[in-house]
Image (cartoon, chains in turn brown, cyan, blue):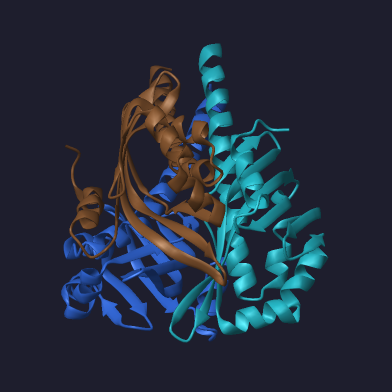
Length: 162
Length: 162
Length: 162
């Protein structure tokens, strides 16, 4: 009986880890539908209160700054032309109430005769489990341009956690 | 003992939900290999008998109409040039024997010097669990062109189920 | 009690299958971060000792040959310009200590005004569970160009295992 209880406890931990993976994917994959529809509240809600969203384009701290970016003219103009922010299937690593992910993302823009691939980026995410569920605590994004910044982010996939 | 039985029953429900997620992904991800190889039967088999497949290009009802679309000249010509129908990792929501998903898809076409991104679309899927397993009961697809239709589909990711 | 033990054993097998799926995705999704950063050791470590990596571009046998390809001038030149090897969400099938997957992959290249989609390919992978975990035992990749080779790979998604 004690052995069976141990087995069930081990299963519960493994199933929770699988569910955590799905929740992390949900956070990453919600960004596109949020920002391509201009839903600033949905975009901001993916991040923890002290989250940092940094890229070669901007450095934002906290959900209010992220919301403001979505509502700003630059982003609204991107949406008006037809945009698609699409992440690739990332490498996720979960460690208790913290998690990290590494992966690619792309921004496609509608043109007169199809689509341009405007940005292809490397990303490193950090996540934290809050009372309301998993949230992004940091996302670092850099365009892949032959320079050293994007490979530096991708290399984190093979590094032991700091 | 009763407590352990409850724990095992709860685990069974959670594992089933994870398996359902994988089956929904399988349905979504099978469309490309089916239509890019011209396998009309494989494409049709993903859908329930009363399924609707609608886009800015066509409105099809039932597996036979979907099969006919794959075999028609327009689609055959697309395949002959070299096509790739690639969905992004979607947001899936399961509720018993029904499920929904929201996500992007792209169609790449081979050209003389690489590939054109021909279509980037928003999609909303509905699924139903049948005696033979999960099937697509509705897929609505609209090209992302700056107009209101595609954002309307993407916004479903943040709406409570109807 | 015996019935509960059976239920737990069945759950353990189902959870292991879900974990295997995640490990297979991890192998497939690690290729890009390895080769786009020039990490030849990381790329080689994804493969079993007798692995074959074949495409319309090359035919490589074993981790040492794969490592050499990453270090060779052709690939280094690709990285220097800015490259992104991005697989799509594949169809994975697990059968004990063997597994297969079928799916698309793309290579994007940085240009002066954005990105070119250089290659869109069909892939068929085989995997084997080793003492160190899952490894790729074969990957066959062919560019989608309207010819018969790529559809032949994609069709494996609908074939019973050989």
